[in-house]
Image (tube, rainbow, N blue to C red; front, side, top):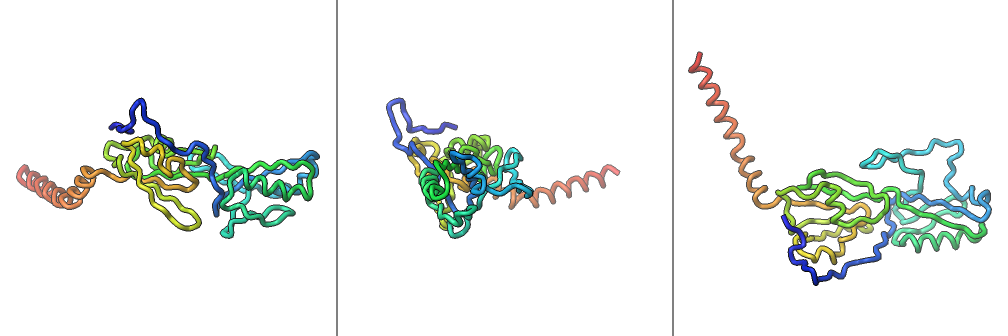
Length: 235
């Protein structure tokens, strides 16, 4: 099965080149603060002394992730000392700048590092290895996600792949044709955290499934009858 059938040597696709994820509700963020004097930054980081650090196993490797902060339904994270800060809808750079300005009131030359701990995508349907995949670098394309799932089966519908995206509780559906170069300029070429990719079965596979559901019980009954008859006649 050939992908990008309309792509030639002299064609280009104008897709996004500088994709940066936006923080969303239910993101689990690692936020680490350092300063010119490391001792002064300790109270601004997650208090782990005397506490058992929660373990959040990744979906694919089983590796425990670090302690972090959950973006609540108001789009805020509750940080030590400075309190609740709104980060939903911000890029990493925007959120980092916002936090650094807050920490400047307390620290000298603060440096903030933010990472999404639970950046994941789910690939379902007619692929070799369906599942949910944790993405450590927070950047993955639709093609890479399909590659993680072992590529489409021969029965997968390549010209009508569904991507479901959730933003602020609103789910949007996108349809992508992998057989054309248009996929490279699609708004879902770069996946966001919690995107779901679904590959439908093609018409031949659906027909076989429908035929088996309708004829399968009859076939099993006839087979049982034939076997029973043979056993009775050979006694």
